[in-house]
Length: 104
Image (cartoon, rainbow, N blue to C red):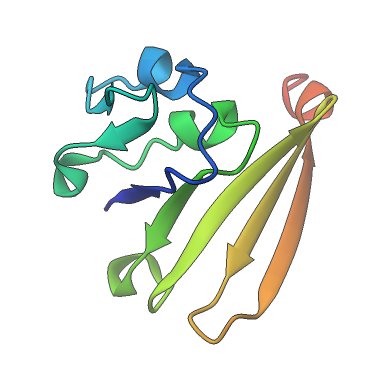
């Protein structure tokens, strides 16, 4: 499992660094986030949920049934919008109401 951080999109807020349970994400000299060893990523997606600019993509390999696609997450009020993009470029959106999900 691994993530990819797009330095062009990264705004340097550091939220992904704080929430990474493996302490795998760092900031470069320009304040942009990067992951030194992507293969060590646990796949928890905590960083994706915190990234407000969708600068982090989670790779969905064959072991995940993704066949080379990726996942991004956009947070909007109490909603988490999960975008799954196939390697062919098709995107599917899954919306989760976090307030409703936390009731159970």
